Length: 171
Ligand SMILES: [Cu+2]
Image 1 (cartoon, rainbow, N blue to C red):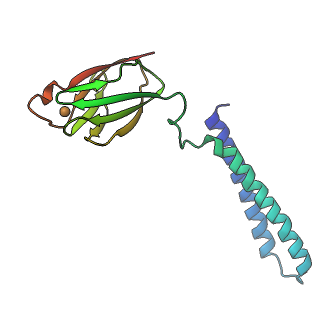
Image 2 (cartoon, protein in one colour):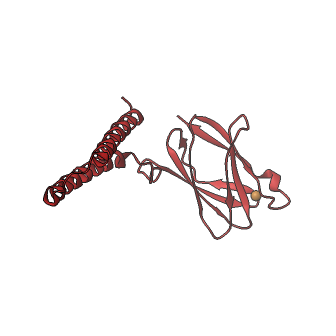
Image 3 (cartoon, helix red, strand yellow):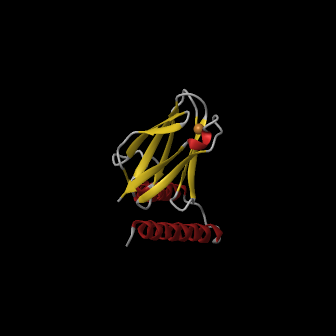
């Protein structure tokens, strides 16, 4: 069973338990009034409290390791430094691998540029505004190896149209 299927199964079990508890609580609350035994009620309250805490703790530990937050900041990430300059993209030379998140760190030496990435068939993937004096970060995972196009999408001067480049992604 895959991770997602496990999580879904656990969620359904927890939901079923919660519904059953709710039904029990409803059933007992709609029964005919009896003389209240305050001491017994207090005892029950304690045990239900323990049950609720145990359930919530189980739910927490069953799900918290699957939360997606912070992914991409992992050890296996690749970092590519991109410097935009009139009129070229200067990129750190390491080859990019498919299937591993790439963190692009983008900066401009002069004016505003826009780093836009397309597939070899010119399908748009993403774009990042590149501003002088600030390092913009963008994480993207290339699913397939191959060549990708980079264009500048911010008019940055007379030779703006020359700001294109090929990224090679290997398996
Ligand atoms: Cu440009």
